[in-house]
Length: 289
Image 1 (tube, rainbow, N blue to C red):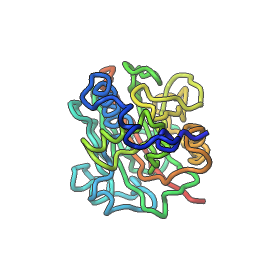
Image 2: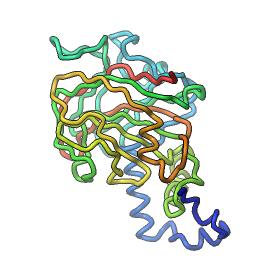
Image 3: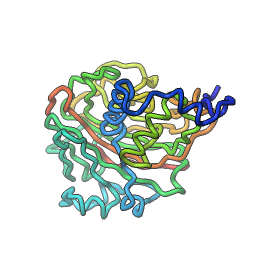
Image 4: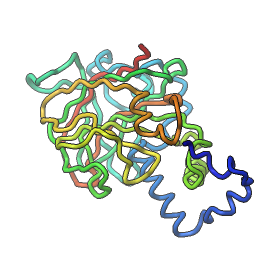
């Protein structure tokens, strides 16, 4: 059953707000801090800037079709539809287009996105055009040359060699009312486009169940280990059924169907564990077929 919140259960909006703690109260500040930490790292923060939305496309710009010498400065990324999103107070992960040295198992056509993590965190974000917001699947390649000692669900070890994010246009009236004030406060303080639901695929080097789990920072973020027991230096090809994964993660709350997919993002982080490594992404392709 979808929890429509008190507004849909006979309570007035004023009464619902009266039951919520004040913005300045310590419990609310702590909860808001956790949500903002989550949206900065786990959902990449405020990603849909007006400039990015002006470059919406049906599928993200392919790394393999970009000039190999492309340097990921703010201006060059924006011209290709990608935008770097750093995490406040943390050194940013470095992004560039490159090819790995030598041969590697399963390598697709390049060049590729190279992510150099030095106890750092950041991501590249790409908004999607309206006609691409109901995808049936998403395909990509990824690889890690080494892995941090991350563990899904452990806040102190929330580092992963590669992440792919799906950010949804999730209607706020389908969010449990206890969580709505967090989102409203974060949107009021930071940006009105803050996503209310995000799904994150992880590349992980140890065994882990494939079922979605809740982010240690926010109930609004669900994580799926898309590739467990991955080996260093090996390219992996992934294909995911977006609707099936969304329903597995949020279906009990949302009900049938799926909201529009607003944007995708790729990233890697090692700030929690101090990890230093390099990882890679091939093309990310959003498909409607």
